[in-house]
Image (tube, rainbow, N blue to C red; front, side, top):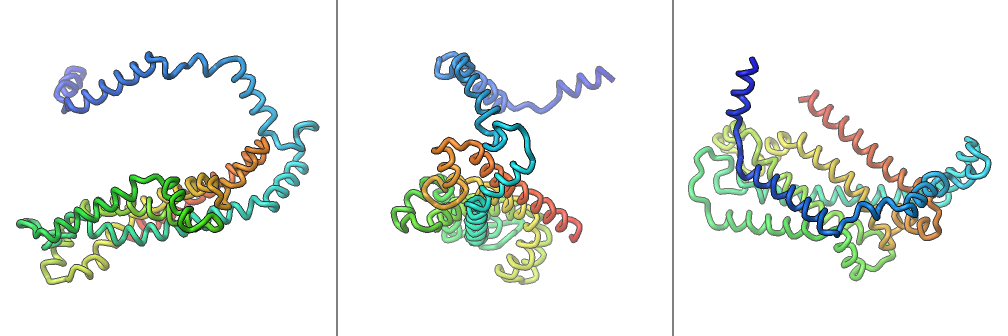
Length: 300
């Protein structure tokens, strides 16, 4: 048995490219470590350890609990005060920005994905023996993919900063549009790859019996790709929640706006509570994603 295992190990597939990549990463990591740019010893100085201890034992402890110890009633009263003052408003604003942004991104990606998919945006969709494609179809795929690359290459923070100069800082649209544009490029790319990886046999059958491209997309491509697309959709929604929180630091009234205010006042206990509210949205969206995908699997 051991000889057989050893023989299988020796006959395993090997890739020189993968090996070279791993060795290169290891070498670059070692050189960075030895260059002095990163100094681990300076990270664990006595001053920093004292700051860490104070942060964990004093700063993030809710204010009413610092003197008299743990008191559930005082904790509930303090939490309610923060939530009613601005916490719930910031939470709802962050959720609204995230939902609107991901819905707009989804609609744009449904436009991009079919145009960028090599199996669908072609003269004969899902053809088993495709011939030379027309220049117009190649140009359409190339332009669509270039637009998606441009959208996802510009960070949301930069997009929001540019949109603030155009739309003004008194509303949430700069954050919504920045998140929507960036994520449409990502979802469009993932959607195109999902379409290209679909089982082509039933789609070729529909094409062979004369199904038009639009009917093929609506009645076959989208239902087959829906499960995988939902996974991507909820993943990017979680990202939208996190980024909507960060974009609040540009002045958009979301969790990030009040987190920045709390940090400026050194109210770290309140800052931690607001961060946990944002984490709660992400956890809830992950649960919803799992439920939706389980339902699709059982229904199909």
